[in-house]
Image (cartoon, rainbow, N blue to C red; front, side):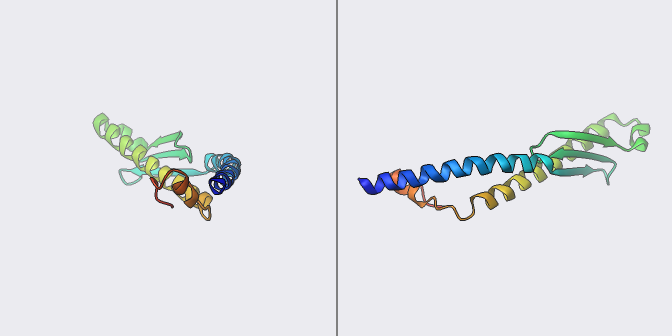
Length: 117
């Protein structure tokens, strides 16, 4: 019984440390930029690491073509690419943050329902 309390206290300490690190990570990610492009670079979408779209650039020649449907399709494709890059960036940062954390005690505390990481 007391072994479980010690593991719980250890997990709580790790959670507190992780909370502070998560805040720092979010600030770092928010400052990073990703770019999605489509149409051979005719449409560019810039987003921050949180997935917020910051800028959309459309080549003037594409606008002059007057093909609204193509512009719409290419814009969606560029946004989706930027979103995918954002997810990759977040995954990399989260992996770096949780690397080395011993979450195995969580499995024991939860009755073995969750496999350790």
